[in-house]
Length: 233
Length: 401
Image 1 (cartoon, rainbow over the protein chains, first blue to last red):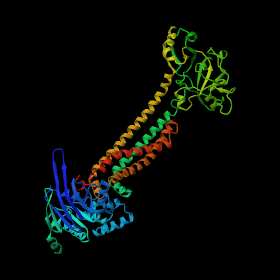
Image 2 (image 1 turned 45 degrees about the vertical axis):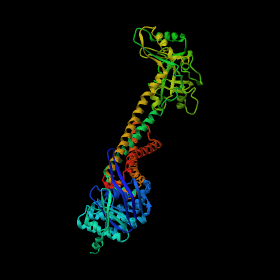
Image 3 (image 1 turned 60 degrees about the vertical axis):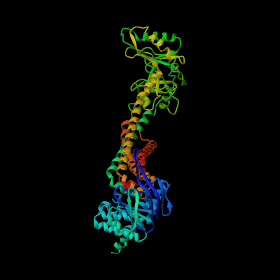
Image 4 (image 1 turned 90 degrees about the vertical axis):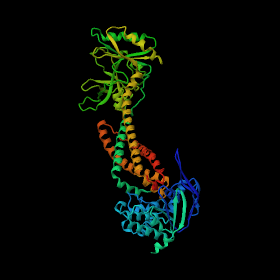
């Protein structure tokens, strides 16, 4: 699903060069649930941005769903993001001015779907996250956990193959975090590949596999044997 | 098009949107009316003068020595001027082209309720037409035999300009017809019609620039001082100006208040109105700039406020052009409401101004043109900050604004 070969990212200012990612080799298969951990400044966000096509990289190749994204122009990258990737952010990033329905609808509009299809998908996505009854509410009228569920609905409405979650429970209390994790696992079970960046080791252990990033390098890749245990418990 | 979500979002920032709408509407109304007034001011701008104004010199003497006869002085002047090389024709006159503001009313009957016709009445010698190089169109021109030099005597005949004749007698010839030059005066008869020439600013403002009447009369006194019109050979008027002036200093008891070519008088006549129109247009331009900067500033502010939101949209698949379109559509909705409101305010203002100016100022074509121009300016003002918005990186969404 996601394959990086020798991917490097360097931030340059006039004075210094910072190697945010160094020759990353990585392969994530379809249907996997992978957690990405690492200390602050290790390159987690850069990894997430490159994986999510939010940022470009200097060296190496990156194949998303079999397609090499290197050298694609801005419009092509936008279209790929829109069609293949669902995003879930730490601070939800809902559009505060719009009711839930229109929030979930945003990526579908950019895909050029008909109003009828958009309606069906938005309603289905909101049902999945249990918020179908609050479609006309504004984000500010919801709790943090509910807002994150709306963000998940927005991420899955377009049925992407790949879900990128950036600290999805970082702003939530443990009960709500639990609900969000349950929801992500449910989505994963239905076949969607999930990559989740997190600080929380406990959450990381719930993934099938944990990738650790230190100083821009993927230094540790391991199958997480406990994940299955946690899930079945 | 993303109109519904934009409307929903606008609902949440009603106050800002309303401010912008009011600004656009107000500017639209003021600019429209300023342009209407400018256009109406310049409507009769720089019309043909009908005379060779480059070659005619106007001299305005002032007779301060009351012991000396004005009539005698005028006769001497005429004699000296006619002898001057380069002078083709001379006449004393009660008024000068481009500067005749002594507008008066004439009538076609002696009744109390008779309709008024505005005009300027010129007194001059039989050389008046020749001096201004005016063509005789109908009837006869005045000759020396028609001249009246005694101030007690009254004229019984007049000549009309072409436009005056058409105005007074639209359906038939003016020759032989009777006109009353003032209420209760004796009637006079029309003997000839001459070509049009520009009278002055007052009649020009009313769109009656060429309505004039000529009397064969040369009766001057300290109370009614003459001006002189002197037509020179083509091209030499400018260089002969001082020579002409020196002729007048050969006589004691007076000074020259002005001597200049009619070309300068013509320029002066239009300058004032040019300034008025220019003032209004400058005010309009300044207002348009202020509004454009206001829109650009407000859009910029909104772009900064929504950086994260724009990054989110980009992450979710918006192309740069989608972001651009979003801001342009939002601005277009606001400016459309502003322009519609502006139309209403404009109509009210124009109605009131038309009453004050006693003239219908409204010009729908012009209004539509101004509205379109406004629309374009709005788009341009929005474009710069909108392009900045489109360039916000989608990575803003994970790295923070």
